[in-house]
Image (cartoon, rainbow, N blue to C red; front, side):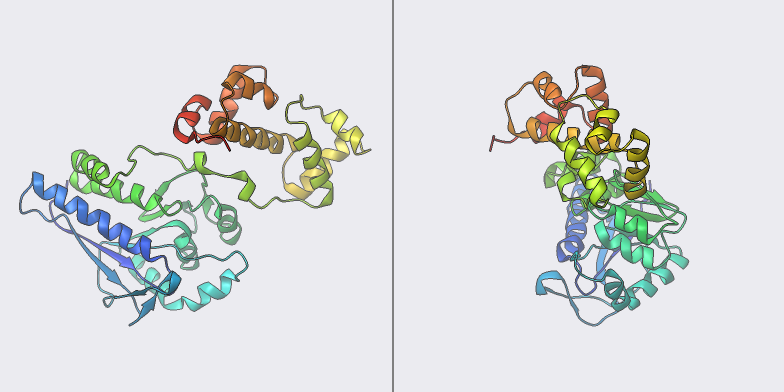
Length: 328
């Protein structure tokens, strides 16, 4: 375990989330205090907020005081307010100084970390090419389309590949920091820091937090017709021939047209919708897991549990225990 002080720089830039800049700095400050209770005199981290600009206004109009760029061991790139209607290319073009700074620091051997959609800045710098990466599940498809040479893994919370780390949305910055603290200061300091901050230090996946209703639905009118029929029959056995009959096409034609529009067969869509419905019932109803399983078309408890766990990362009972809320 390293005994020297690790220099952590948080990169501030126009439109960034100030909370992600200071969230990293503040949690590391807590970790410093915890460390010093175990090892008086040791200062494991030095933190600073850096920018190639003299003045930075973050998302929400918040001004951030910044220091001039200097060498650091780890450079953290926060996410930014990403408006779905905005031209992302224009936004990234306006962040040319930051993109160049990332390239320069990476070439100098600095470890680069992005939080949430900060991954798009790393992509613009060429740092995601031929690497695994993650980001918010809401924007993972957009990142993969924009950077086809990256391997985007949307279910992961934190991914590190050859000196470049990417994280999922917002609170995943805490997962990254706790991991950093553990590597630099040990498991005990990391766990105590997490307890003080009320941070979950045992998460491994963002899959339980995905809300399919917020994701864009691929496909044109034919695919939407298929999906509407499937949505109406969540509790019924999957019957490709009957589905094709409703649309007056052969099963082979249905599969060909649906795949051409969506890139997949209808069954994976049905499975996702069944899991989405099951999640909602587990969160908000008193119905038993068996009843919910039947309501989404499964008679075999093992098949349902396997499907649910594969999509969500938790079993049905564990998911209910974590996400149960009062019924609507």
